[in-house]
Length: 107
Image 1 (spheres, helix red, strand yellow):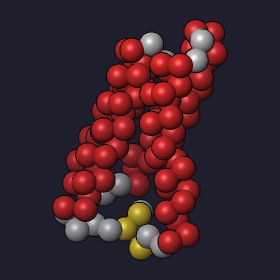
Image 2 (cartoon, one colour):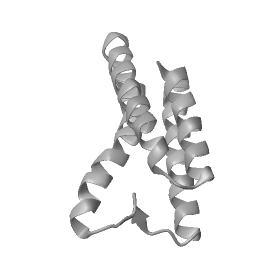
Image 3 (cartoon, one colour):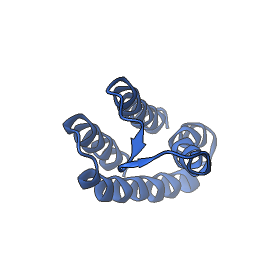
Image 4 (cartoon, one colour):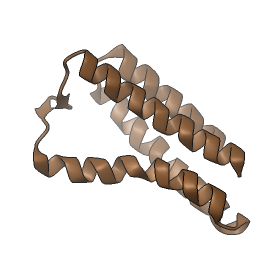
């Protein structure tokens, strides 16, 4: 369970690194669109999922957390696979591929 939690922490940190680099580069858009207040809640919900998985991986029983990790990791892998072509910067694509590697290890 510690390994799974560590993989979710690594995934979260990879996402955060991408966000920090995007802010530092001056890119405050999401796929070419200016981010509005209405977009922040869905983004927050989406980004809290790996953080919640850290806690769940440490607290849920084995059969339940096994399937939860597989399902959520497959979701993130697919989501990121679809997202890779939409990012123009090489660092974003690289970090998405790294996070997908963490998802594969989780599965």
